[in-house]
Length: 436
Image (tube, rainbow, N blue to C red; front, side):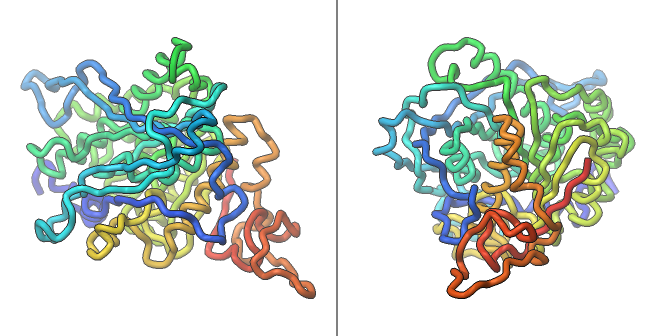
């Protein structure tokens, strides 16, 4: 096996091939209490953040180090908009369709076009709002998270989704592109959070409405891998993941700094990095995490490996943590659904949707739980934890006895044996666990 041969394992092959894309959906009537869109109008804007030279782990310099290059990170921001934007909640999102080897050229559009519910470059609402930074998975794009970005912005958050540019460098193999992702994910997250905090400190213009003292970080798949490191988890320098890379790469990653002081909470969607044979973290390294963390995953995830990977990360991490599990879901638990122009190809459905779960239902449940988690940790609303502290781990074990003329679809805050905020009989297929 060559230097990068280990990257050709079955788990990584799935990771390299199953990159989600998305399409925002209007949720149906079975949305839990906090899954609805909020009352605030939403604005959206795009920024490109530029940073100085960073080492490129795919380009050894022959002197024991690495060549460097500037790093530019486009960021899409959704935010509470001024009341005047309420009448103009329409925009269009565009991004190139992810190429798939088995899809013939011309059988799908080269560009994905999504209809959004936000006002482009609208003025921000008065006040300062907590910040959620989202980091996508390998070969994803920021606009694949437009649904979550819009919904949370309507509830009083600034949501900044990083475009990491995994597809930008066509000169390297996917294995090398993946190695760059391993190296850059956590660093990108830290750079973006620090730059937004710097701009917010200027107290002028749009950025003055960002409360950079109250920040959460969400990451999906490789973004979740980075988020755990940003939260303070230490890598395992002995991992084959680093041993197969260029000499010196492990040393670059070994010194994991503490989390940024303004980072208050972490959300890890189907985080990669816990499964064998490429387990990236040590148990001791994960134990360094002290921040509250919400894990969200499917128990049939065969990309990040739910049983041997994601659960291991959840169990070994430190700090107070919850895990929401979708029963019979695979890896695609975070991004938008498949765009209509790609939905006729199973190759895209496999990478974007779920075989059992309706995506609009899943996105609404995510919004419900994430809203509670962020309201608790970023807005200091201690009462919000009641939505997370469910009365029993498996939702289906709850009961809401029917009464005469009862409405089978009603949503409830009780009784005590039922998950609050869900419709009667409809809280099924979900598990919630808590560790301190």
